[in-house]
Length: 134
Image (cartoon, rainbow, N blue to C red):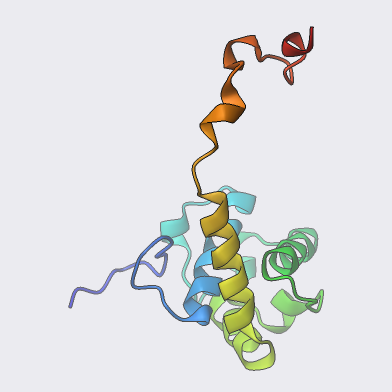
């Protein structure tokens, strides 16, 4: 078995546990929010090492709450200062299996192909379909 040097495995079929799914989500969001390469983020390094400040941390907690549809403490990333510790805390104190399965089912529903009959007037679309209204 080959071990990857990075902990980032988003979209990897081997990701099966809720903890791994949350870790991958956190890495992806942290990378996007701080303009970092996700492959450089390690699950055992403190968030502050990557430049996460209090405003970014509260924003990230809010995004995580929205994603999991859970109420989480605003101080989550200060009390549990690594991706690994945060995900572990969440798995021990919240029902992540239900939350993650809800997220996965929503993502699979949104991945369904768009009904082809909805785009009949695609050539008239522009500026929010403003031109198609006339």
